[in-house]
Length: 92
Image (cartoon, rainbow, N blue to C red; front, side, top):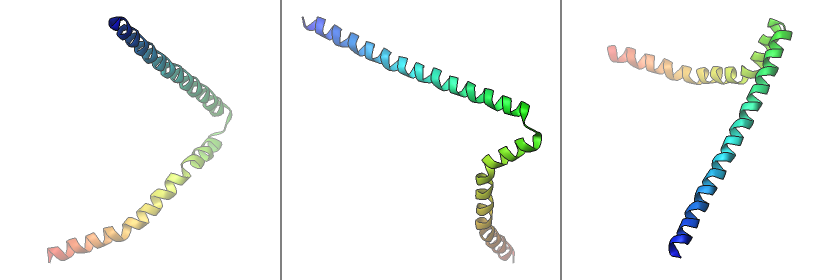
């Protein structure tokens, strides 16, 4: 009797693991479908939009990143200048 209950627990664990794995599989299929739909929409936009419009759309999406890099460069500028002066001073 003890062996039988252990076997049932083992089978229920396997069944639960298969359910979880199947849920991840379904999630992967859903994500793949959404990705395919977005690719289709993007491809249609490339067909119907002018190159200038595509450039404006791309710039809209990366504008924040470009601003961040410019601000970071301004912050790092004085540090770079100080390191250049210290290198020059050490050569004296």
